[in-house]
Structure formats: structure tokens, C-alpha cells
Length: 90
Image (cartoon, rainbow, N blue to C red; front, top):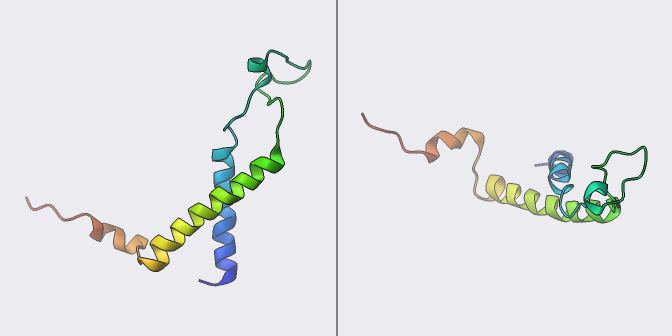
């Protein structure tokens, strides 16, 4: 796997995990009891996007390491998935 391919896969994993990690520890204005007029009650009180993106980078690196381990070290590919489940005999 070349650097460009690895970066593209990491980039897709990073964006996917961003949407997974965004709701963690988020307090909405409605639960905090102070809704700013003109905003959605479900909007976060503080976004802390820098901290969230840093944690997301760590999570995405772990997921990418797991992907690399499964695909490049153990050699599991899409073509080998049917061989993982034994055939049933009628």
C-alpha cells in the first residue's frame, strides 16, 4: 500500500469516526437550561472542536491500525470472507 492510498483510507476513517465521536460528552442548551434566543435548543453549549478533533485523530489512528493489522498482516480481504464461514452440508 502506497502513502497516497494509506492517507486516503485514513482520511475516510477520520471523517467517519468524527461523526461517531461528536455526540460524546456533548451538553445541549436545552439540558443546560439556558437556550440562547434564535438558536436550536439541541445546539451544544460549548463545541470544543479542537479537543474533539484531537481525540478523533487518536481514535481514527487506532481504527486505521486495526484495519492495517487485519488486511496487511493477517491478509483478510473481501475475497477471503466467504472462506471464513464453513459450508453447510444438506
